[in-house]
Length: 430
Image 1 (cartoon, helix red, strand yellow):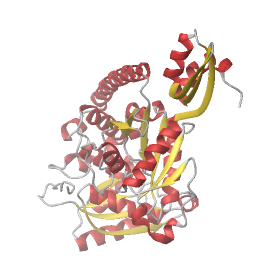
Image 2 (cartoon, rainbow, N blue to C red):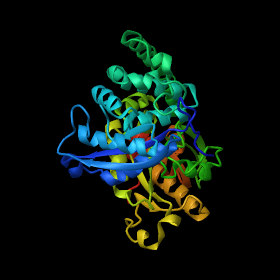
Image 3 (cartoon, rainbow, N blue to C red):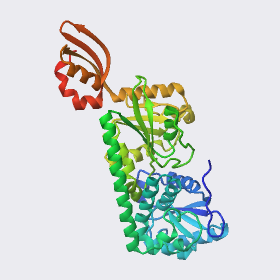
């Protein structure tokens, strides 16, 4: 399924020039400016934009008025007139004043990276919760910039930068927008309340939860589909999946867990978007195990891993048990495979389309969720402890010896941490 093509007020597809500013601070940072610009191309194409060309400006610091400098802005205008561009998309976040000055100088619609990502999320949001979260993020982003988006807000029709809340909402005064933000936050509080109820039910039922996280387009939705036969949308594009999807996954032991696919991460993910989607992303915090899916074929694999780890840290989930999955080994080729970390208890290389790999993954998930195998010796009359042993893990063997019952139990980590103190005195020394 191809991304929807959106028209401008002239009935034409948005035709854009991409612009990136590289400063010494950016060069010293972890993100590769060239990779970021390539990613911007994919983001623009995902939003249905025709990318005409891209250019990079090197400066010591951003220009406070024109971001890339007035001279460079003049070059962009000449290039836009030559190529017939309708839009300029910047790889960094712009202030309202910079947007206003660039619009006046370039006579183009001005979009920055944050607004482009928010626009894609507006396109992808299907559920009521997703639509609320995207609108909240867009309004939170646009509120301090209303004075700088005059031309964007006056344009009719579709096109990037105008989806989501809609033109009429964006033209409301700040007081009305603040009121709408307050209403959206109240709706999201209700979402959080419902999610907390569902979490409490899951905890009481003893069902464990596994969360798929990773850089956008790493293959999380494909893994969910292949592991659970879920009918989920899968496409080779950025942010193909927005709304979280949960399905039941059966492990080799026959035990079932809940596997949840989450929204993909990306470098410079807008803060307003993280804040709006916190109710959804908190599912990661509630997971008993995080599966960090990595695109092993990506040349920016290590940088993408760092981005995901940083966002997990921001969410407070960095201390969760993790299993790193180096996916797409069928695409990465022989030389790249040699650069992957050696397989261990916390990582494995696989292809989502390999039945053998999926079987190994199910076993690895089971091993991660299951604690050590220990032998307990209970007095035969202690039915309460025997029942607790069954609830705390999987009994793999038992035998009666006079007035005692010897039970070998494959422990469930989560349950043993809660109830194990009642059983520790009965563990048979090794």
